[in-house]
Image 1 (cartoon, one colour):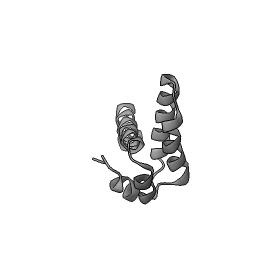
Image 2 (cartoon, helix red, strand yellow):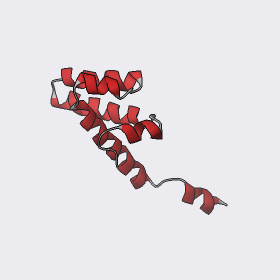
Image 3 (cartoon, rainbow, N blue to C red):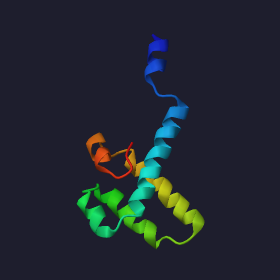
Image 4 (cartoon, rainbow, N blue to C red):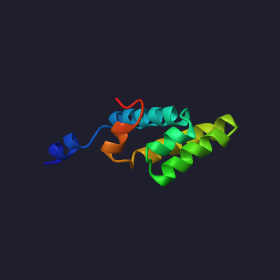
Amino acid sequence: MQNEEKNTKPSRSAHKRRSLALQNIGARLTRLDPEALRKLNLPPKLYEAVCRYDGTRGHEARRRQMQYIGRLMRAVDEPTLHRLPGHV
């Protein structure tokens, strides 16, 4: 029984790969102009986080903001993710 449960749970590496992929999609979102972002109908927190990225200046602050964007992207539903530029 435990083997079945272990096989259904994604590995730590798989979880990291997915998180990095979502963070990369988030990086593409930061390059879009505000009008294109509005058309994507992103969740409000994600939209705000992407908009705040431009105003962030320090290297470490930008890195943390990008990680936050990646974290918010994990909560986005699949149909919304498929509409985003750079989705694989």
